[in-house]
Image (cartoon, rainbow, N blue to C red; front, side, top):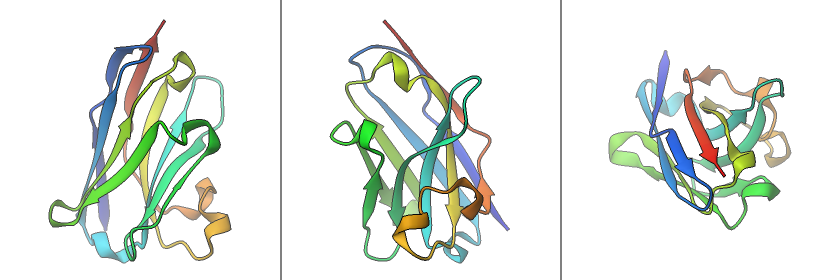
Length: 126
């Protein structure tokens, strides 16, 4: 069983930065993809970014391209989401997810991820 725990959320002013961490324990390598999703109050859970363990390819939703970077520390089984130039609309509960994902076009689908962390809150003030 794979366990995921996020950290690094908090309150930041617009234009600021945060780095989220997702520590994976257990059978981390049972999944080939790690991803970040976010959910604002009253809205659906949306894809933010993903990283393939093999090859290190990364993927981003359009609204965060150029502002966010997903990376990994393989030795620590940890995935990071560096978020810069934060906007008020980035406010959400951010989740780390892991799954065995096939084609790239299904990376953004919530239901394809088997493992989820409890989330970490990111609040961006104006």
